[in-house]
Image (cartoon, rainbow, N blue to C red):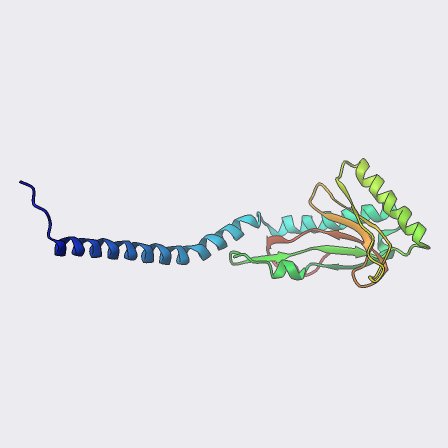
Length: 199
């Protein structure tokens, strides 16, 4: 003979099941909230690529500078006569999100040259030269559109490419002036050791 549970027992079972579901949702939600930052930080750390040794980073500095010097020479200029500066502290690189192990730092090696062109036509010819030379090297070349009339360097186009070592090369008007700049940007790099001087 089958016994039918009383209405009070059925109501109690429903309340118990509902409480279990609510408890499971609360626990699941809490775990998700706690694990999301850990997973995100792990993912950011993994996406940042390898950590270079101090020796490897110095080699990357050398590649960055040599790539830019090669571009300057292709314009028929002496790199040492037009070099404007070397820096490693890219602001976006330093502020980049991610968790690095102790002893690992981030730097963005960049070298800038400021060739002095006689005219806009000479500058445009230099852009064409680099476009042709970089294409001949098998690099993917991108044109940088000329800026609007109300911006520094208005009307002057630019050109950029990335070499086999990951160095981004560009010739374009400077961000805050109309003076052309040839830049070799080594990108944001994680490495061990502290760079005292860029030799």
